[in-house]
Image 1: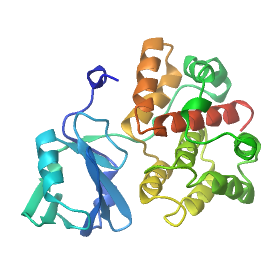
Image 2 (image 1 turned 60 degrees about the vertical axis):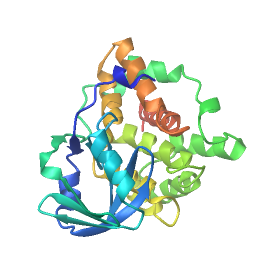
Image 3 (image 1 turned 120 degrees about the vertical axis):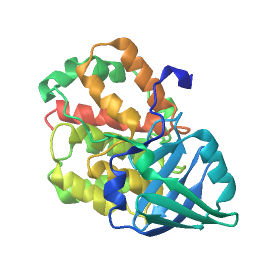
Image 4 (image 1 turned 135 degrees about the vertical axis):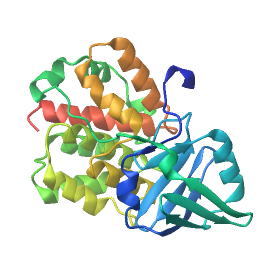
Length: 283
C-alpha cells in the first residue's frame, strides 16, 4: 500500500495518553521494532511510532529522525521517567528527552455513529465486508473446533458471563505474533459491539480473560484501550464508514487496516464483520 494515500497527523499523541500518564512517574523500554518501540509505564503500554504511520490508541508519533535517534540509543529494559509532560530515557548513551506537551492531541475515542442496528445490513461497509474472502488471509485455521467457536461468538447471549468467558478463552492468545490472531479477532468483534451498546457482561469477561498470563502485553494494551473506549486511528476511520456510501473511502480504509502485521489487519476485520453480524441478528 502506498502510505502517501493516507493522510496522517504530524507529531501527535492519542488523547488517552494523558489519562495513562496522570499518576505515573517511572517505567522502562518494553520492546523495540524497526518502526517504533513500546514503553511499559507501570500497568500501561505506550507506543512511540513515526509520524508517517497511523496513530495507536495508546501511542504518540514523532518525527522519523527523532525516532531513529531514540531507537539507536535505547535498549530493552532501559529506565524511562515521566515528569512534567516530558519522557526522559536513561540510555547507555546518556539521557534523551521527549517533550509530550509539544505534540498535537488527537481524539481517538470511539465516535457516535448515525447507523442504527436496523440499518447495518443495508450499509455499504457491511456489504463490502460480507463479500470479502477472509479465511485464506486470517491467522486462525477455521477447522471444526474453531468454526464452532466462531458460531458461538455470533450466537451466545452476551449477558451470560460464563458463556462469554468460555468463548473468549478459546480465542485469546491463539495464533502467533505480537498480537495473536485470536486476540485481533476479539478486538474487532468488540469494536463492533461497543458501537451499539454497553455490553457490560462481555466487557467484564474480556477484561478478565485477556491477561498477560494468556497472551502478549501488547494485546492486553489494545484490549484495555478499547474497553476504555479508545481505538487506533484506522479503526476510528473504519467505524465511521458505517455512515457513508462512498466506495472509494471504504476501499482505502480497508486496505489501510489490512496493512497491519502479517494477518493482524484481516483478523481484526473478520472479527468486526462477525460483530456486525451478531448485532444484525438481534445481539
